[in-house]
Length: 237
Image (cartoon, rainbow, N blue to C red):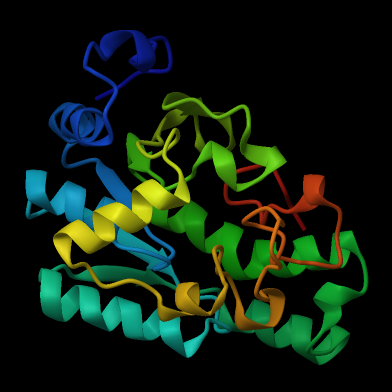
């Protein structure tokens, strides 16, 4: 068990590579650790499963994911033999939101969009992380200005101060693609159509040349607002 008084970043003495920090994290926290995936790519799933075949992997189905995301999930099950645990928003909350605010309330304002994200993503994540000491994410610094301050190993104050590990923090999209090609891994085919960052179908578009990777997420908002609450802020509704 980890405690809030320890600094996990000081415990780790490895070489800083994604595989090394993942091995340390899985050895240190298993079985109270899980890998979160948005099914954009399968790099972290492959790395973690290569270390522990019984690694726990979960994803959040918002109810509005693109078909390509589901296809990637199915490929993970068939080709990597990994069972993904799915978490869904509470149906009564989604029903209330859509009945009272309409199907596109997320475009009305930043507050309205965050309300939608909270219902569809943040609340299910709280359930997914319940009882864990640590979780692993695929966040990278090169994705957006909101992620410049990331650390490879940090405390997650939003989720009970559990440990959060970001093994790919210093990787580029080129590093990710090279790993996928080297290991012949499944990935979300929207990437081939100009989607370097993929969320709900209604909130994601292809990016234009020269735009940052998350420019296609909530494209009507300012760059500093482009987070859904999974990795930023204590949102509530």
